[in-house]
Length: 221
Image 1 (cartoon, rainbow, N blue to C red):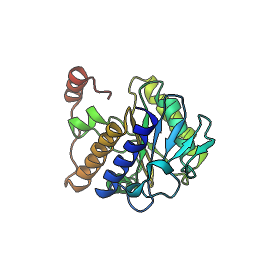
Image 2: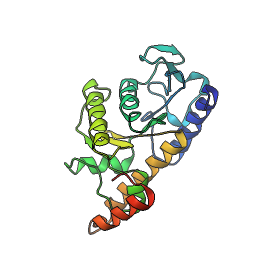
Image 3: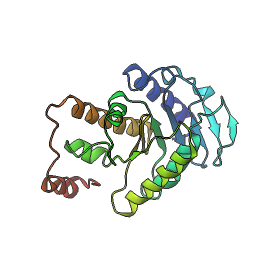
Image 4: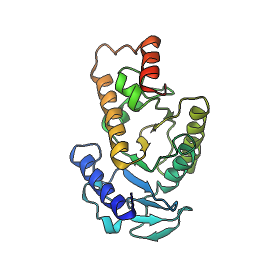
């Protein structure tokens, strides 16, 4: 994907997420890592539903602005995620952050190391473990460092992850394209919604059922 294609795809995905309620107002951001190691990222305080491809922020590999509107304050977090995630998923080229309602709501009412148990097969296959990063203010360097460490920890134990949940803020998901990252986010938010509306709470899949997903679909759980 070249820079022009990446700009168009960021705007297409941003509009889709906004229209379907995954983001609101100026919450959320999307970045794409280009082949030269630089990044395109949505501007600070931009509404993802009304992005202009020409105004997306372009920053170099060190986070210095090259062109476009001022980059989102989360660029440092995105850079740390790319650096950690690409050790285990070298194709990682897109990160999406939203304030998705059901994911955030779960962190308001729980204190668990992971956002969700393995309650559906597609959550296990398409998302995997989602560790919760304790609350830090938006843009905090401490959250970026902790996120990178968590990605390393899970990857080194053989369960590389594609998402983390920032407590009280929202999920960050990553994949090889904006479309694939959006699909991962959708599966995550849908699983959070299912857990919240289920009464009683759903039981997790059994170890045997998860083993079957590992052997059949190479699920990382």
